[in-house]
Length: 179
Image (cartoon, rainbow, N blue to C red; front, top):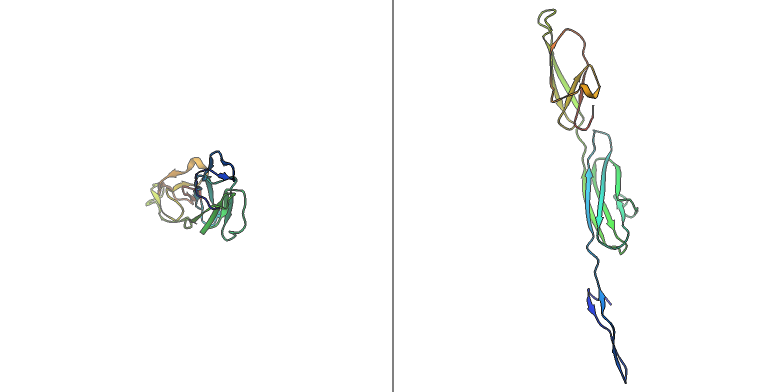
């Protein structure tokens, strides 16, 4: 009982003979290795964080549980729809060998924009400007004037020059597509 890995022989002896078994090899499974891939929340309030676990080693099939339900195991190595916060995941093999992964899902601050507009100096000069200050979200930022079409966004654009007197709509998008 409780023999470590190694090579063993069983020797059976009676009054008139002795018999030795063939080689008996006790092996140990490879260590359970868990490599997590963590995806933080894309846009403020989206609750689309996730973790995917790549598991190797151990014995047989794996099961997984995530906090706060660490006693509810599932066969899926991916957990999606996570909100921001701290989590623990258990990866376990058929023998009950397990690894615990602790991780955080973060959420970017809300994407916000402020602007400063300067009017034309003289009517018809078309020298008005809009200057943007962009915060939150995930840099780099892109901006577009009067259009929400992907092709009209320009990365790192924070000013619009040579504008006539008019009403304009400015769209801002971050690296994750949050607008």
